Image 1 (cartoon, rainbow, N blue to C red):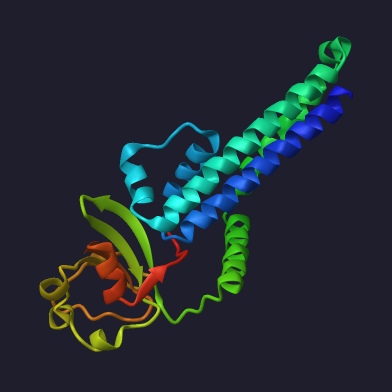
Image 2: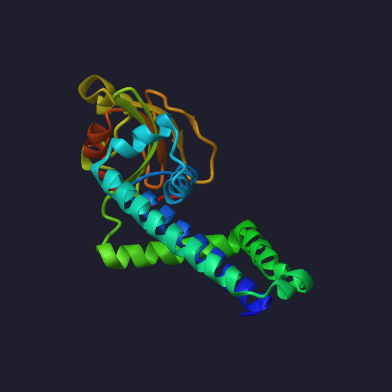
Length: 238
């Protein structure tokens, strides 16, 4: 096997590993994790390097995320062993003279990495790929936008900071101010920030009225938040 074919194979493994990492990242985002946290956890799990104690609490707090983490770790172990074995066999099969005189072959994986970097840095292309994955997930899981979406931002003890996207207003809160909803005294949920469409997030006030499309940053018990806002874990914009 010549060095050019070996480098093409190496480049293929790089692309495959990147695609797998992005797919698992999307799966974690389906459980309500923001993209950056999900991607960090996936890379850590796939490479077997472990993940931070603080962020691991987010994974361990959900049964769905724990299952997905186990699958990711097992898949990463098998895939890594397969790649290492294949690459070792490829490079051992090459002649020493090829390794000495055909270093141009190394430009192939470097070009592949450069193209991947460019792809990730083009917002329109990245957004298009994300949109296609969302459509596919909606078809597979038969998801309809009749429920609101939640994204777990962080855990603080037994409580959570959560972003809720209001696709529709729960009937019991429709047309009412935040004070009239009695969310905090009755459920312990504190609405901290409200982001209307096209506007900057602002602190929630007693006279704040929820409207469809609002993004709320709330603090409280995760399950209680989901129940109060009729929300489920789903992919939403970060």
